[in-house]
Length: 104
Image (cartoon, rainbow, N blue to C red; front, side, top):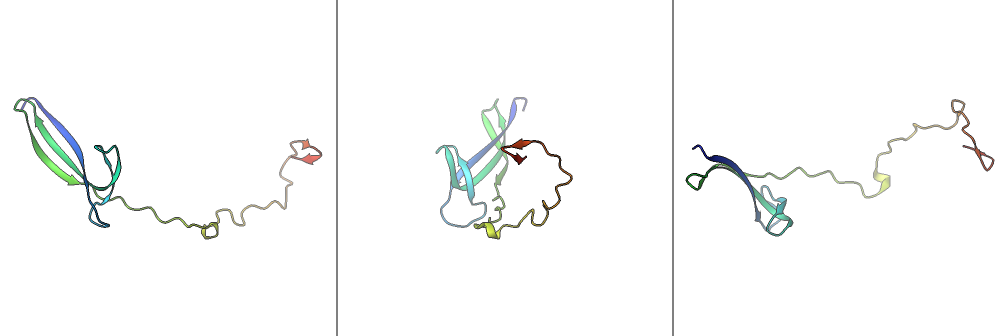
């Protein structure tokens, strides 16, 4: 097979329901948008001399792991800078100037 090419094609398959292996949001090219369903990836060897293709591998795209839930209220968020910044001693700073009689 002197005139051969490798081809990869991802195909979208709509699926209804709430669960199932690989059920996630994928790009549906025929609709031009992401939709909920399944995606099948196909690797094939194309023989242009004989106008045919041979499937080497078919693979279902797995579901990506979900991101953790984010707390809705700020009080539930961890405080990154709690008790780390203290402005009691400013002797290590220099006066840059004054604006309207206040040091800046």
